[in-house]
Length: 261
Image (cartoon, rainbow, N blue to C red; front, side):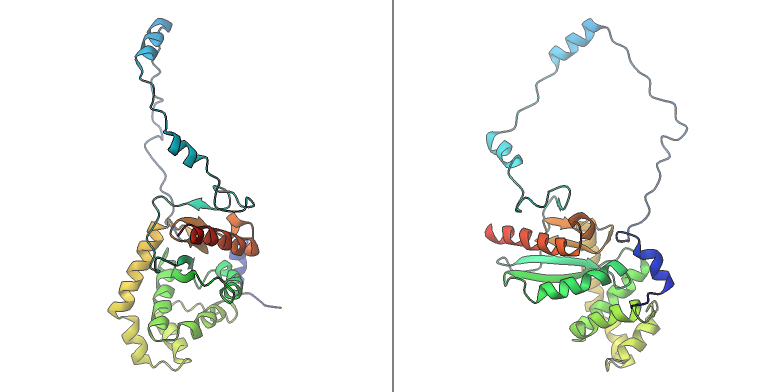
């Protein structure tokens, strides 16, 4: 049986790993007097109503668009199992491809739990689907791991080290929470300390990290793991109803996007 470190057990009960800044409590309403209530005679109310213009009615085309069924079999509901990003975000994949982006963090136990399902899906996903990973950047440690992700990718070690990074944290209890720990871990994959340092601090890795930060903002990511289909639909494990349901939802949304190309 897999033994999880005690720090992880407290996280497992959560639906996902949150990375956003805590919401700031508004102080404007605290201790403020309630707004004054204006009273108006019935006759004045009727006169005001008569002068209020009738709001324009939506066109027939717009009405039809608003009532169009969501692009799934009906098992998954828009607004419950997934949401629509507005506006649709640009993707990095070719126009004939449907991009599926996973936002993740190596330190998140929920991302670790989802990863085997993603790996199995990748072996049989349709050819028209382009899969990309986007590291979450919600906190300082997330950014450190994001830089490690792009460093491994730039060194040609991305595929080899992806699972290993997860295992090192969640099975071996090494949080990889400093640059020195990451340097030593990369050494196990025949990456010299000099090569690691050079790439870890490189302009190309820094640029990719900035791009990840932009995507996190555009996707409005507040927790991981999260999935964005073709820059248009946002969902996660909790919204979909489970790991297997998430994969099925991804397939349905991707198929609908492909059919519309």
